[in-house]
Length: 157
Image (cartoon, rainbow, N blue to C red):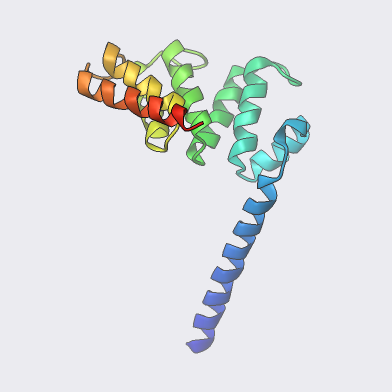
């Protein structure tokens, strides 16, 4: 029993160490200099930044054939891995019916997720959606709150 506990503890320590190392290594990675193949390899390893960049490549047809379905796929994966840029991208796609059926409620939901994670663009979008009643019931107080949050966040940059 004691050996199992030690083994489990070592496994956790090694896992945390690898995660920390991987995160540290990726902080210094200049994604803009990576080829599509390199981005694809990282994206398949659940690298959210590589995933959102692949989504952009496929949406715009940069170094690949334009493919909105692939863009949607990589943005969803990235958003599910916590990338707020991908969440905002999905909000835009749902607001405008790009690769999906236009759905203002889903657009609002993706933006709200990103806003709650501190993304200033998403905060602005949520504020405007509350102001206009796009995908959510109009609410002046919530609109003012989110627009103020976006303003404060942008002032810090």
